[in-house]
Length: 322
Image (tube, rainbow, N blue to C red):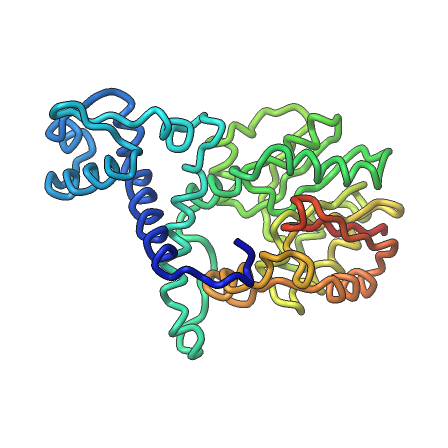
């Protein structure tokens, strides 16, 4: 359904109810616990759950076709396994818990609209947020890396700012580049272990805050062939992004590129609604137009600015040469 089609309210409410139910089942471990048949007493004990709640949720999941009941035992349905068991091709478990966190923030929109409450400063749970970021399809990641290397064929190194779980960093390493993944200390601590990023040849994990001016002092001037930022600019205000790109101009080698992946307002059909997500979940974030990106990049000394669609038309890659 396109964003301009009329909303079927009954269907939307029903779908929202189902998503919250499925997300709750995922977060409490119901699906993974039901790889084998279990009766309700065993399952309740194993998950330290409330028996009445477990019965009601399981019966609803059976009605939806995601769980099957055989006599007095339950088991995850075959069609649900690739969706809800980690490792499946269609696994949604990386993103749905993040959706549940987002819902909490969206329910504060009446207060935010009135100016009575700002958006959240950062995600509630690093693990949930990193799993959501890691759910980015591999094909899109490879496409983005391809486009970067088309524009800097002789690139030898890259810094992946706010690279989180390292999907883009790994893709660059696979192409033979030396990569610095730069993120907040708590993020690096988490991903180095949970996403097995420590010890990868060609990948350096570095802790810091690139929203601060002093971060550029961590590196020699003009150190990198490619400075990459995926899903970063929507977190910040127009003024913050302008300052950030000026900082990045000091990191990119002459002839190197900056590459920004994000929703471009006016080009991506998802940009306007994603800006609402940033209203709910950040203090000053939003989605920005191509004109704004071009202005910021020009002011930071970049040229040869290009905007490329990389996920159909849903997301864009903005590149510029230093």
